[in-house]
Image (cartoon, rainbow, N blue to C red; front, side):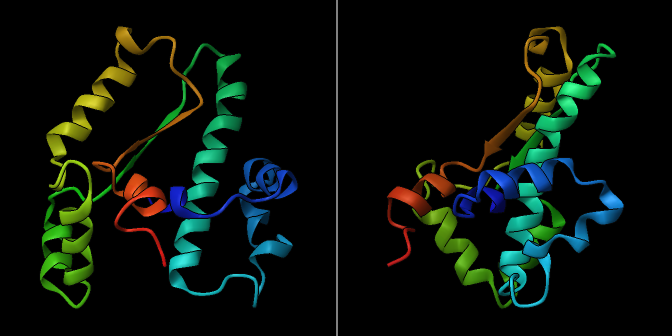
Length: 149
């Protein structure tokens, strides 16, 4: 979900993240020292890059009859999330869960259900998409109780 919290980039930056060969990404001006503010910003840019590359690759892979999509989950109860919830960032994670519209974290089965839809016949018209499934955490970040002040 982190990439969905990054403010809009320029069209040129979007295209560069989407189309630059993987081995050349770190040479992009927007990724140089001083441009990436902190680890959270780095995470957000990398996730946005993933979403943009999925869109670009959907065009290329579509010519071969394949579909390409991404899933951007929020807090999903896994062993890693359990560690995060009990670690130093736990209060922030719990706040996100408490203040999101669904009021809970997600489950691996819920992510799997979306994956099954995307990979099955029912998802045959879906490609080049990034599915944000975070219980509304990002919506609350932009428009609700989690919005930066």
